Length: 520
Image (cartoon, rainbow, N blue to C red):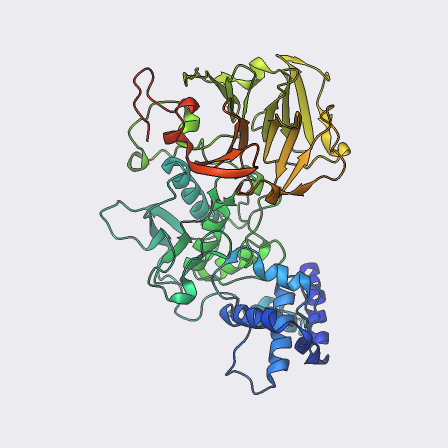
């Protein structure tokens, strides 16, 4: 009942705002209004033939509907917050009938008919559900820069998420057999219609079809990741689109996995109460259990080390260090051009000629340093190591802590969860990178210099959300993201070349031991 009252309170502002003057929508920039109109029509908010109301009224009402579903202040005006929301990466499936569903629910609450609440518009229409409880699936392909075993593990976990709270069971079909649900990565137009064509990073990341077509498509050019913060989290998008293949449409419930804008992993349960009720209304509760088994999103933060126990998903064993086949958390270089590459709880040392060590435990070298660090840099002034994770930072002279314990770096204006760190020789300062900005640090390493942060556009051609940066002996700076690198001219501060680091940079250590053979 408390949850129902909260839903009602959410719906009231929209009901009250519908009687306001719609003429305010006409005062928007014409070009922005046209783009917004195309967006609203694509995602099911604006139907030109469904209403005889004036165009300005239809547009304003569609803006209100979108603001309500997006949990924005409801004004009917195309303000900056609404425009920003429209540009956020999201699911390509339309948000049709989101408010009608909740209006029906709040009406049932008013009539004290909670037990008889109908949910027909929350998910698939009559006949648009699977006629069986045991469904097969196939992962047709996956992004090249992600390891197959990790992607398969994320797919299996995404299906298990829905199986845990419903009467459904899933199994992976052999490659030669038909499958009920197929997961495929595509580029651009892939014969789904121009409205479903993928547009590279950002925009619509994926879309899916209701039963019984059993298709979910993902943008192959998106910067997919299976880690916590870098790139687009593939596991969350997989779980969301699988929900569509089961018959669920978008939910306006707060923190719902089936919300049109993909949920972030956190400490709360991955499925909201609305997600659970929706799938159970279609397929029933788990057999033998009256309460759904829920897991917090914090458990689903890194699949790269997950190797599913499925012989069909195993590749022949590959040689070379682990980071060469997937990615790394952080990278830095000391004054002898020796690389330190960090991943999970381990690190590798790579000499200047590309000879790589065995993996070493981070804790054995730097006591007190946690796993999964986010950024690292060696000062070429004094040789000290600087490490960053979350809002904490560490400084070591060799393997001895300089500060005695970690410091709270955000007190000096440093960003939380930095993407990468770099000792920049021309400035002789440490530089932190975070999203589209960079920060120059004072010599102490705990204060941001005045007039920073600044835009990453100062470093022409360097992409956002890099995973590492290195000064090189030839005077260049190498930036890393996923499986790519960018070479920046220090003097001109612009990118001069790019490529794949594992195959094109032999000093990264990605070759067969003492053979010169490439791994990829």
